[in-house]
Length: 371
Image 1 (cartoon, one colour):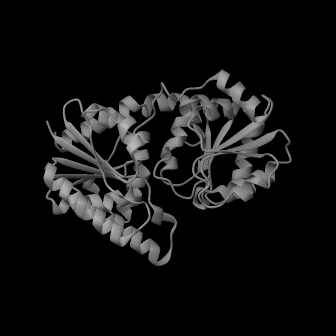
Image 2: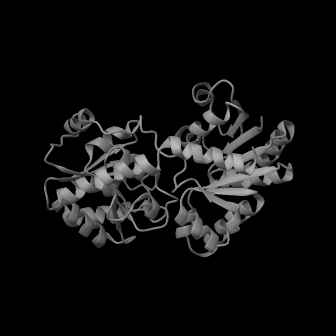
Image 3: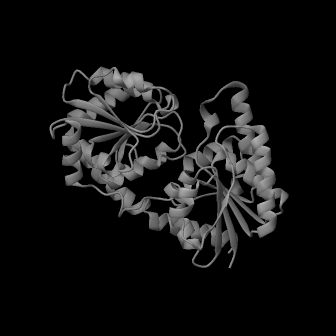
């Protein structure tokens, strides 16, 4: 039996991605989870035999609070004498790996899931890149959630090539196929609720509303095709960059906010759009694919692994509204192609990205590295 600690800034990371790994590892190991927990999350999220530590790991930089968190984490690690510390998210990666190195934890793993600095310039890019390099240098092994991201990070000297692994063909934890599945009932019900008919062509954006997620380009592209009165763009997610005025000024754009029932939206839509400037992998692509929903996304590292271009979806030039519009018109006018992309996406996710398969690959990684 080994003693394992997962460290992450947000409990949402645990809920969205880490539970399958934790549930498997706890069968034969002692598992602890260190995060910025609230009392409500502690009570309902994890099994009783998983130990929880509350640590204030805020998303935004705060030198005094971050230094305090580092000292508290060192105390936790020295007290428990872990065999493995595995960190997720950039802030937890830096502080967790520093604390693990200082505490002489033998096995120090970090999972890279995308780089904020990939689209930055100037001193911010240099600083953030070097933080990732420091995190990478302190680990004994790293996981990366896509092959193209792994190649990008090696090229940028974030870690040595022999230090890194990818689980299967990519993703953090795969797709739970019992949760993500198409439903005719949900399709008809949600369309009726939104005032849409079965004859309407519905584009879906699902994710945080941010400039670097490509929302302005998506809106510009939608303007180019919105002369078609039966075309609608449905946007689901939290507005983090004050982009709501941009959406509400368009007649055929429907903003639905955050939802816990994303599978209803996947069933309701005809095409998922993800015009992001940067992604580690784009898990939403394969979650949609499990619901037979094809995707149109930027041709960038990460997304180029989530989509097999012209087979399970289409890739467009990044930051190019005209190319987005061109591909949208192509799919709107070719329902056979759209249907084939959806079927191929469904087959691919069942073959390469199931939760069971990725968890199996994760356990192999742990066994090879330590257990």
